Length: 287
Ligand code: F3S
Image (cartoon, rainbow, N blue to C red; front, side, top):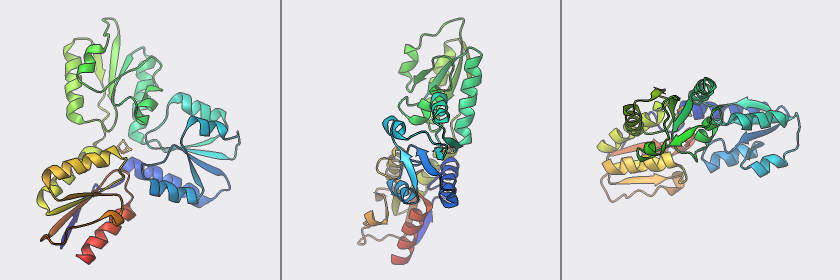
């Protein structure tokens, strides 16, 4: 049995950095109360194990309001960042802030702040309910517009004497972004486009597709709530009929009656390395 594991499986650079920051805070054990602004990643097992190490994920505004002002509180901002208003509120509440916002997301915040301060109208291409986009919106000093489809371009009230700046959610589909931008540009307004899509997702998807195309069985590891993991599963399934979507090794149920020589493994952005290794070792040793 041969196993090919995708090099880009699991955490991207930004998520890895954020998780490492949380773990080193927990290890340092400075006696402070450690919180993360929302679960650090979409993986309940990781969040639970951090909770056991004393790191508490604040999941709602109500929960945040219940935390008393205390200079002994540390708040870690996760990789997709927060808005300026949220940051200001945390500072007001006396939190020591540890900013694990991915540098690629921080770059969007800075662009949006600077360009809106020049009076530009910010157009964000992405999902308006995603926390990353909510965060980006909150750095614009002018009211931003969020769209995620070609059709929504028609709803924007473009004005001749306004300048526009277009940015994208880091995980937005590259081709779809291109199409939307091209449509905006044909309208002839003063538009400056900043390409802010991060390649980590694209690279993970295209590598997984290539692997799935040549293996007999493909295993996709990811949380069932994670949209990027589900997408990865769909891509692999298109190439390899025998594709399995699992959360942990316990879910793995391979059909041993089939002659399987080559197995591929990939994992969504919120799957920790130890789960990937467990699956990899199990498949190598037991088949
Ligand atoms: Fe990850 Fe940062 Fe890209 S969080 S997906 S490396 S924008």
